[in-house]
Amino acid sequence: MTGAAVLSASDRSSRGEREDLSGRLLCELLSSVPARVEAYRVVPDRVRNIRAALRSMVRNSAVRILLTTGGTGVAPRDVTPEATHPLIDRDLPALSLAVRWASYEKAPASLISRALAGFCGECLIVNLPGSPKAVQECFATILPTLQWLFSGSTREGR
Image (cartoon, rainbow, N blue to C red; front, top):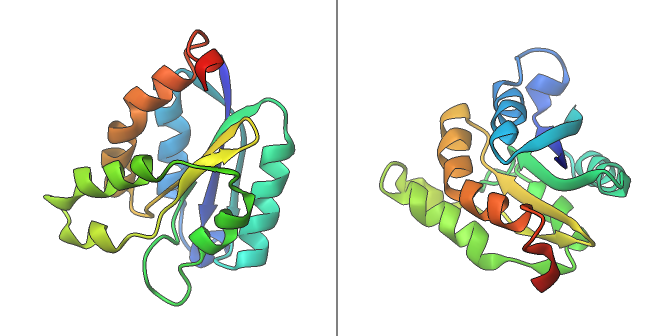
């Protein structure tokens, strides 16, 4: 079973003012890959906090999939892409584009998402939006790709 991690970027959830529904949902959804959640964290919407958590999770050799939720929009506090970008050594722009496009009919604002996807070494990082509904829809879009990438037999061609 593939190891996974979930990072939620949310000021309010990190302060305990709001439950992290999106991060918890991702933890549940990952079982359909199938993946086992090795790490789960909630951090404030700050580049240094997000980047430090990402680095820590990527260093865990068991983690091959790292999904983030929150901070992908255009508000001043939406900084998850800025925190993620320096860690990605193999960009997968079509994956993040597919997520935006699949969400477009339900949420036209999805086209202003700045979410990234790519590999940091052997770990796939994918930024997802912050709302539970958007997480559900976006995860459904990437699920077949995650299953293909982490099925075991497809890893040699990458």
